[in-house]
Amino acid sequence: MADKVLGAGEYGEVYLATQTNVMVRGSSKLVTKKRAVKMLKADANKDAKAEFIRECQMMVKCDGHENLVRMVGVAVQQAPWLCVLEYMDYGDLRSVLKVADDKGLKFSPGEQICISKQLSSGCAWIAKSGLIHMDLAARNVLIGEGNKVKVADFGMTQEMGEGGKLKLQGNVRLAIKWSAMECLMANTF
Image 1 (cartoon, one colour):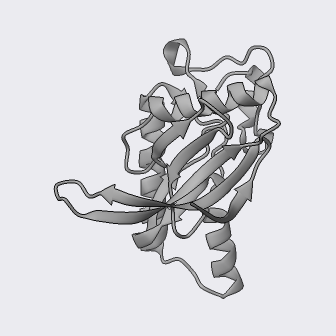
Image 2: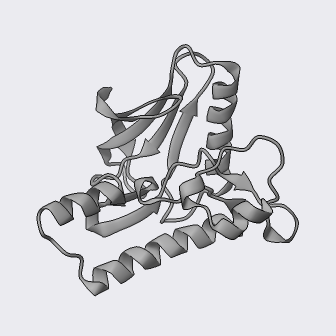
């Protein structure tokens, strides 16, 4: 059941939804969980559908780390196409930092280190999986209960080539603002 719109992107919207009757590991207890559901636009073209599938595949390739947003499931046999993700209660790091600043709140050095360590751990796992995120920005880092930090949005993620590098060829979407100048100059990440 979709509760509200959390955000929108180039190819669709993300909704807050409720999943009922989730079995808790190691017990027979059933619980209800919040989920984020990416829904592809009904009028999506062939390229948008391919990008949606590719993003889901990238999430599968780097699945299994506590600092990456977990994909719960995908439905692409009929419209609307859906990607169900774990929900992070506090939203993206950019918004959290902005609200904290507006309220005059400061993160302690210990909190900053904790966030950085979790983010680094998630990024290391992505690299170990042979991938490059390509759009790592505060808007794509989600915060959950207990200041749990998770990398999200794998839409621009690319596979590394030989030697752990990616040489750009053809049309590839880039987050130019977040790319190192030397990578842009050499077309190598």
